[in-house]
Length: 235
Image 1 (cartoon, rainbow, N blue to C red):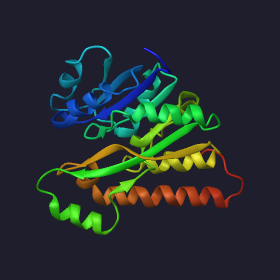
Image 2 (tube, rainbow, N blue to C red):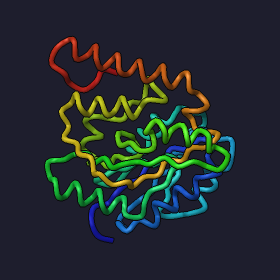
Image 3 (cartoon, rainbow, N blue to C red):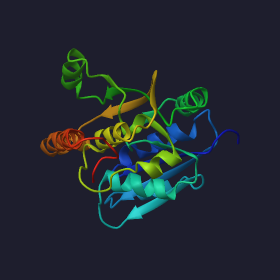
C-alpha cells in the first residue's frame, strides 16, 4: 500500500439492504491504503453480519442499543488508525476515484485540513415524482455533508463529531464548528459521492425532527457569534 492510511467510518442501523454496496464502493477505491470501520448502531437486521462477512480490512463495532449516527461516527473516529478520516452513510456510494482525488486535494493545498467534494442524489425506482420535484428545485447536488468530507485526524481531535444533541443535522453542526474554529477547508468541484434516496432514509422517516434540528443548530451558531469572538461551537 502507498500513500496515507485513510479510515472510512460507516454508521449503520438496520441498513443491511444497501450496506454491501457501500462497503464495496470503498474497497474498490484506487487509493489502496484504507481501512473500513462499520459501526452497527443497535441494528435488528443483519447489518453486522453483512459487514463481518468481509473480514479484513473491515472492522465492526457494535452498540447494544441505538445511540444515533453522530455517536456512531464519533466511535468510529476513536477507533480509526488512519491519519485521514472519511465518512460514508450505509446507503450511499463512493466514486472509485473519491479518495485519490481528495487525498491529492489535501496534498496540493497543504494548508487545508478538510477537503469536501460534491455529492449527487440518485433515486431508487418508485420515487420518480420526488426526483422530479428535487430536480426542479435544484436540489440534486450539494457539498457540505459528512459523507463528502476527508479530514486530517488532528482536526477531528480538535473539532470532534458532536455526540450529543442533533441526530439529523450533525453535518451542519460540524461544518459550523469547523468555521467557528477557523479550520481551513476546501471544496473539490467534482461529484465523488452518490447519495441514495429511497423509502427509508433517516431524514424521510423523521422529517419533522430533522428540520427542528436544523433550526436549533443554526440558532446555536448565531447565538454564539452574537456573544463575541467565536471558538468551537458550544455543546
